[in-house]
Picture (cartoon, rainbow, N blue to C red):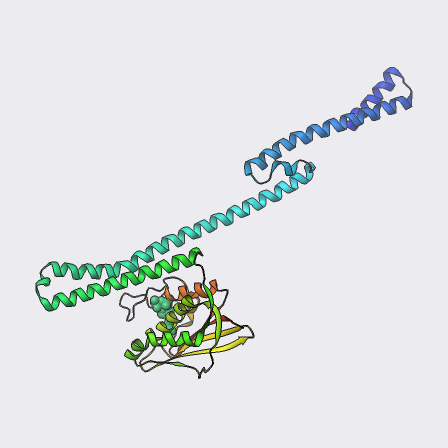
Length: 329
Ligand code: ADP
């Protein structure tokens, strides 16, 4: 446009005023430069205003950051930013949808878990109120059963509390040095009676005469060992064995293995095993009770330590759960 105006003016001056060529040339050049700068500035201002509005609307960038950049670069930056913005928003929406799905699923699972013991307790209490309370023998039996239901409820509440804390990521670890062999022994002693009921032997893979010192949250690792050992008893076969081994994995890590020769797990279930509320046997008439939270708690604790958990299992043969821990050296 500036060039056109300049050329038009030079022709006009030449035709109507027959001025000197060099004067016309200088005059035209000044005219060209002036109109060029003017048009450029106006266009810049005009586009800048709109671009800035879009930026401000999206609150993507500080308005200052586009002050010094030329328009073409701004447009490119804007397109890029909008593209990024759209992608981020899409991701955000997907995350929110996922969370919503998880929330619904979680609530569904929790209420399902609570319903069973609650109805059991209610059943016994109603029967007692209906007259069974007068029979001394039945009264004691029903109260004991109702109490079992209450125990189960508080067990579920405790597990839910722990998983909520773990998933929210606000469970602080109390890292200390301790002997993992001794801790395994403690857990063995705690569940000796339970294992005995199924004639299951709780044993070490070999003799550990020396302490094996690790650095971790002792209480939480006790929880991990408890869940894994209790599972090996629950899903173990009569006269079976639960074996724990602790071996060096790297100069800085040990691997703790809990192996059983129980019912094992079908391959198709393994990828979902650590999901909260996941149970292989979902039928109401499960032989062994469980909330399906045990393994997901285990995984959360191990991952909170920055360690890894592995599983190997063969259906009908047995399972091996193993996890790594940092050595105290
Ligand atoms: P639950 O409370 O049902 O035991 P877990 O999260 O501890 O929940 O375990 C999830 C499922 O994994 C169990 O329902 C069980 O089917 C399976 N499982 C866990 N440990 C073993 C094991 N040692 N042997 C066989 N199956 C197991």
